[in-house]
Image (cartoon, rainbow, N blue to C red; front, top):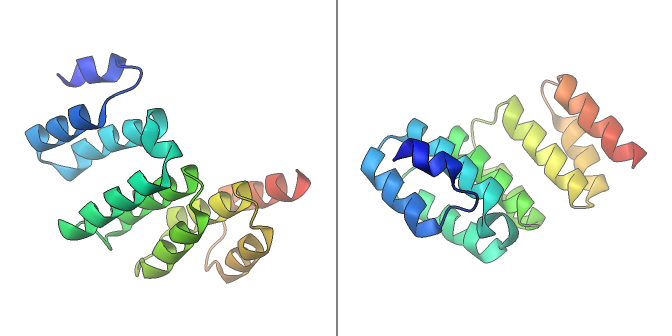
Amino acid sequence: ICTRFKIIQTPHTCMFSLLRRAHGRCMLSSSYFSRLVDRSLLSKCPTLATIVHAQLVKVGLLPNTFWGNRCLQLYFKSGAAIDAFQLFDEISDKNTISWNLCLKGLMKNGYLDYALEVFDEMPERDVVSWNTMISGLSS
């Protein structure tokens, strides 16, 4: 089933849910979640992003940093930058990935001032952080 899922161009939400239940392990399911975010309606619909966020809270996977980062990515890809920024504030154990996702998402959604604030507040900047800032400021 897993190999079949990889060749599907646009996986259906129901199919993803069934596969997630079948595997029942967060780390394995996360790769399918990533594919769903990248290739389906979820990446273009803020309402569905909110539903996914609520479900992750309901089953206790948030405010986990890993799943929080996945939701950040989902919100920013769907254009719901304000919701993403609120979620970012809720993640208690932010890692470099969290900070970079927020920085990149704010830049891509046109919130340059907020992105500059996030960059200033970052406890640790890496190559991705600097490249995101340079790319965002030059465009």
